[in-house]
Image (tube, rainbow, N blue to C red):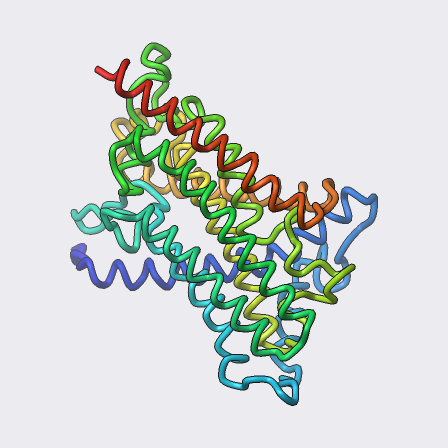
Length: 357
């Protein structure tokens, strides 16, 4: 006899699974980053801890965990510890509104594979990204170090600048779907025909309608996550290690993990908004012929595959493109991306008004 599972139990299991997934992806992104760098530079990369260096993240995590925590003499102790905590916490709770799969049927009840299916998921994500700036700013200021403070100022101004372009590119998607609900936006990409006449089961993705919004969002996501070529807040050649300069032990580990979790969530959001999220070619056919659970499991695999591919592109960019100067970074944000996003928004609105049925 199958005992029906209640919603609360399923949500608790989902939260724990998402936490474990985020931490696992963050840990192994460090290994992946070094392996990608090695491949591009014709080296081997980590190869000592376990086969192919697969245990390297565990060794690094253990090293950070057992290191002595050091607080600078004139630092604000409370804020010094608060900064990395905010970064880590905010990066982890952003994944709650992202739909990671279609549905699973357990004991005769269908469950959405989403921790919190709220009507304003897009707004929630933008708000969380904004709060993430505080972690860097507080940590940099509390360190009582000029390099840390410069890194924190750069991080906050960069993230505020690129949030505008990111938000404007998102508005085009919101106009098209008519909703702020991420589950609705994702589900809409699994039905209908591409451009109204090309049959495509599960492939009616927003990338075919909003390529410019995708490019703007992708560049803004690189800047928001402080990745190359926008890693000005922590550029080693100028600022030692930016806002993280005075951090060691697990405080440094929290910042590092937060950064990689942010990269993971950013790619999950890109996949959700532009590449159909958990949709894959033939999803509706699989649902009808092979059942809800098979379609649900394949949808999780599809979503995670898209996210991992996005992370690999982020890593590839890091070891390919040189870093921008700070003035170039600001000019790109304010003089190029924001005007482009506005033009794209106006064109989208005009097309919807004049051509929508």
